[in-house]
Image (cartoon, rainbow, N blue to C red):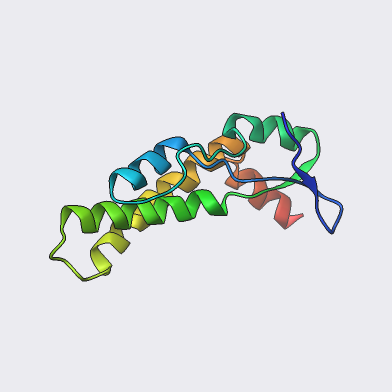
Length: 120
């Protein structure tokens, strides 16, 4: 496991996971991303959090989802110019992405527990 950095607020920070399947799909749809790009293995998120990592960046992962959805849409429908249809697909894909990351971070299905804690 890698603890990537200590940020300006003295928190351990773990960087994005850069999912290889997203990079491959983007490149198959015309992208030119480095196929060897890698980040933190998402299976390290929860163990890292338990060791004191207080910030795990997933923003790059989300941008890869956006890029993949839009590249695939316009590759498959080159006459289309309206950004709204792939935007609707992105919202669905991003929701799946966030649910998956919540599983990996150990925060899935904890909303009732959090609400209860906030009332105290």
